[in-house]
Image (cartoon, rainbow, N blue to C red; front, side, top):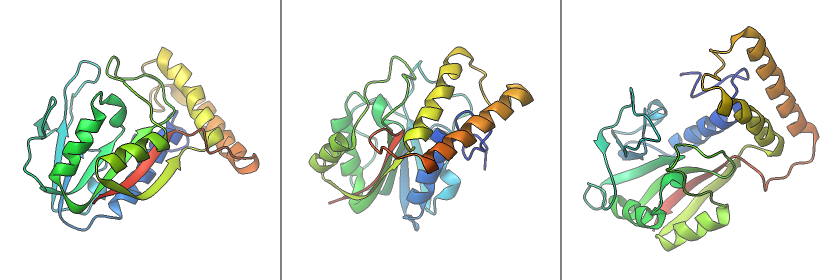
Amino acid sequence: MSLFINPKLSSPFYFARKGLFNAAKLFASYTNGGKLLDFGCGSKPYKSLFKVDEYIGIDFENEGHPHDEEQIDIFYDRGALPFEDKRFDYILCTEVFEHMFDLDEKLTEFNRVLKTGGLMFVTCPFVWNEHEVPYDFARYTRFALNDKFDKAGFDVVEYKKEGRFFETHTQLFFLVFSRKDKKFKSDDIGFFKTAVIYMVNVFGKFLTKIMPDNDSFYLSNVYVVKKR
């Protein structure tokens, strides 16, 4: 498993990527055969975790996000998804909702192509910097997402937050540097900076253990929802 996907404490994006990896493992535990649609699949980083018979990746092309070396089966723009009704047992959609200006319409389409009782797995950032500009449209609270899922015909099966209060602040500290240095990765920046990153991340974990928590400030929403 790539360290980009399942990072060590020496990664400047440890808390964000580790949280997404933990979410993907949670999602994979719900699968057992069947067909999965990965919407916004990119390089399909979590594909190996899922126990499914068919894994189809779909993504849309924009200048805010390069698609070099990605594993996209179908490119898609907008409107109806190019699949028949009730095609899939599962839909995976990680860190994509914020890039949809028409999220309500997409949720309706997800409901259409998902089998009755099928599951959709979602991660959606709550605290993060602007990215893939200008295609960064929204940040959602869990209350907004609960309402959107309900109106689109989904029931929440499981919900959790990834990124505790001090973990989130630690991650945002490293985001300051990533904005200035596009090569700000643990395998690019040398031993000294890697050691500093490791120590700061350890300190963030330490503060999380000893300080009072505030769960209203976090990195990502994590959902498992079921089609009614």
